[in-house]
Image (cartoon, one colour):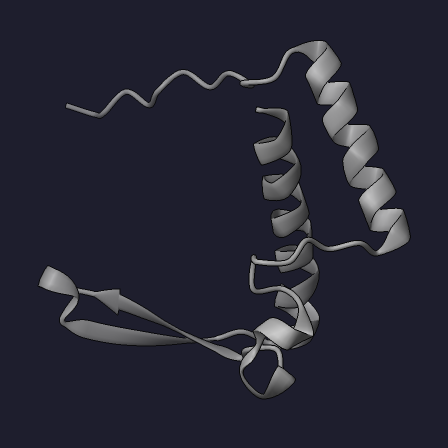
Length: 92
C-alpha cells in the first residue's frame, strides 16, 4: 500500500508570513547574512566556499558520497536557505 504523505500546513499565521517575506526581502536587498550558519567567508576552511560535501550513506553511514557543489549554483541557494532558517527561528 502507498504511504500517505503528511498534511502540508504553513506554521506561520498570515501576519507572521508577511513579516517573514518583508524581513527576507530586506535582508536580501542589504546582502545581510547571520553568523554561525557556515555561509560567511570566515566560517569556511581557508576562506574558500566549500565545493565538495561528503554525505555518509549506507548502513551505519559506512559509505561516503562526495557531492560537487559548484559555487555559482549552490551559494545563492545556501544564502537564501540560511536567511529563511534564521528568520523563521526568530519568528517561531
